[in-house]
Length: 192
Image (cartoon, rainbow, N blue to C red):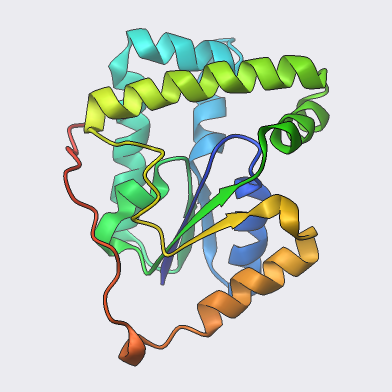
């Protein structure tokens, strides 16, 4: 089984993807971890690295190629990244989108990164604008188009334990015999 988890910064992707993978006995791969490692290697913050990536398209393409290869070649994994659902496309059994109001996401990021909420909000807006621009330019992906996802959740509506229950129940309720077809992923240019 291949499950993708996507969403904006601070939406709970990492926390919930790790817990879902553990609950289902699957591996976990985080595109965000890989991206942060790449930023640290260049002594940049993720926001600075995002903006740097606008000038060097190979950064995104290298990361996205690795994530696409994982989606195509591996099973029994939860693949988590902003583009995981798009990159995995027809290879994914489930494509989840997580989100939360910007105010909640900024608070989560501020706590995680030990910074002020206003700064986290400002940086998050810049980061999202940068990513939205690059995804459209590189792959013709409209990151705001949620039609490819099997389920989209506002993660601020449940506590962490209850939300995990919702995700596990969703996956366990799936019966391939009742599947009338997952949403296709069309029009994406996988130009790495």
